[in-house]
Amino acid sequence: MQIRQSVKSKKPLIHCITNPISINDCANMVLAVGAKPIMAEHPLEVAEITSVSESLGVNLGNITDIRMESMLISGKTALEKKIPQVIDLVGVGCSKLRLDYAKKFISECRPSVIKGNMSEIKAICGIKSSAKGIDVGTCDVVTEENFDENIEMLKVLSLQTGSVIAVTGVVDIITNGTHTYLITNGCEMLSMVTGTGCMLTALIASYISSKSILEGTVLAIALMGICGELSQYVKGTGSFRTELIDNMFSISDDMIIKKIRYELK
Image 1 (spheres, rainbow, N blue to C red):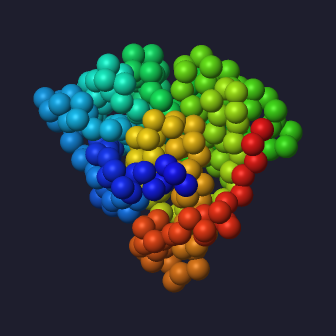
Image 2 (image 1 turned 135 degrees about the vertical axis):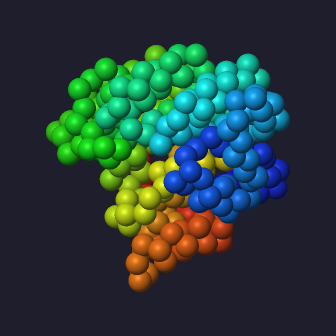
């Protein structure tokens, strides 16, 4: 829990370039874990903003020309300044524009973490996927039958890009090509509220500011799943959204240790 406490005490500035659908929730998620969000996206200021931040998170949801330009500027600045960064591959499985852009960003900015569902990761790998909009396609879901080949694909991608690969799903998979974590925390309600994936990207950005990239990513994904579980017994999705942020703010280290379910491969 050293990373978690370090973020709370240091209050790092986290630069998030995300979409207007989730921007408010992303900022509140960063605040809930003790960091400080800044959501600048104007191309003429993002290099300056990124250069004074401790981490960068970019998100391809609801993409625009302005955000595409800004994310590339920020990503290159983060690379130059050795600032940790995460890219969320929202929709690359269903949009050639996003896919081509994501490949360019990964090549030119070399993000610390590449995050997506299995359909999005397959698309990045040049493998035919069955994405259902921004959601994972049924044929791409990880099962016992395809588990080994999918893990191998993720390890290869990690080694090729130098990035930690984070795949979200019923079982979350995080790998740096050598060590692979499987996390089974979570609940169905997380997929019923818009922006929870974006919030997770902001959370990853917050924790990789520690420079512990693999561990920070694992912590963020486990925490989102645990807080989802703690928040699910409510009247509806609106209450769930509020409870999710509340639990992220108030959860204790002891509760995390008690609730986390993971396996190291």
